[in-house]
Amino acid sequence: MAHLLITGGAGFIGSHTCLTLLEAGHSLVVIDNFEGSSPEPLHQVAALAGLGPLEQLATGLWGTPDEPRQLLLLQGDIRSSSDLERAFNSSSTAAVEAVLHFAGLKAVAESIAEPLRYWDTNVAGSRCLLQAMATQGCRTLVFSSSATLYGLPDSVPIAESAPVRPINPYGHTKAAVEQMLADLAANQEGWRMARLRYFNPVGAHPSGCLGEAPFGQPSNLFPLINLVAQGQKPCLKIYGLDWPTADGTGVRDYIHVMDLAEGHRAAVQRLMNDPPQLLTLNLGTGKGHSVLELVRVFEKVTGRPVAWEGVERRPGDSACSIADPSLAQEVLGWATSHSLEDMCRDGWRWQVSHPHGY
Ligand SMILES: NC(=O)c1ccc[n+]([C@@H]2O[C@H](COP(=O)([O-])OP(=O)(O)OC[C@H]3O[C@@H](n4cnc5c(N)ncnc54)[C@H](O)[C@@H]3O)[C@@H](O)[C@H]2O)c1
Image 1 (cartoon, protein in one colour):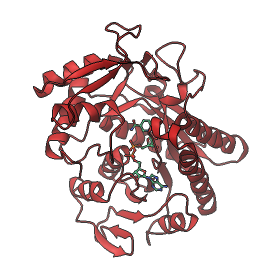
Image 2 (image 1 turned 180 degrees about the vertical axis):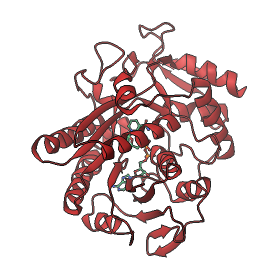
Image 3 (image 1 turned 90 degrees about the vertical axis):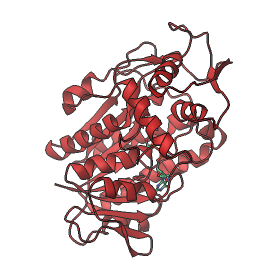
């Protein structure tokens, strides 16, 4: 079992993946600056994994000192080489074998308002991380990429060979990091890397103890549906009822966050077992659901009505985005197992028990 560094491990996808990796027997050190999260998810992760409580070990460092499977949490920034050096050397017993890199900013509208901030965290932060990895002699990386870099696809389902044509600054930053990884793979020996292109992650851990807790106003559809169902927001805005789809609303490929977490476990395992390579894989279900379909399934599963109104399409949205996940299935021996009903049920359980986040 390996010792792994997780950047952004206190966030939505990172925290669920931490739990899956601990359950698989790995030891972890998480680095997170808590810009979009807090330490609380990691306390939940430790409890769900059956570890003792996280104790403060030093300034900005928490951990489970008496466990054979370590979980360490460092408050630090991926743009700081000294914070990264501290993360790499935080375990006295094990060297970091691989990095799973979730840290980043992810809101499209915010990236349009503040492109430099997105380039700084997502691109300069990734460059700083890669430099630290090279210095530490760790060349195995799983990177959180996004289906957003396909832009407006010519056809669906979308294979990894489809053109990379992002249409907003967030997408440009993901494409830039993907290119950085490709340049390393092509020009330096020994890098084992996976660029995982997520479609639409939703849902929560089935315990209801871990979930999505965005700071401020959420921009993703699923947290908004939850807030409307709970009466925290009056109405869901559906952007466009005139898309060329069966019911006129946009179609997306929703993936349960636990299936996504399992995809990361499989990817890092594959990289550590295989010779150096650069993998580029879609993580989605291969099934598309319209916004109205998601709303109806959510209402059926939860028994809660979701008030909605149709408004103008947003520039840059596409009618339909569905993954072709066959390459990930073949390469990783991985497949999704959660239905849209599961995503709604688990996401709602989290929302009911944590109406205002952690
Ligand atoms: N959630 C989605 O819909 C989605 C879809 C595709 C790709 N992604 C990508 O997956 C990754 C994780 O997404 P998420 O939904 O878990 O987001 P999240 O905001 O919940 O988690 C990101 C984490 O990174 C941390 N962070 C931000 N800047 C940092 C920095 N400079 N140094 C250290 N930590 C920092 C935040 O505090 C947060 O804990 C992101 O890179 C995102 O772009 C997300």
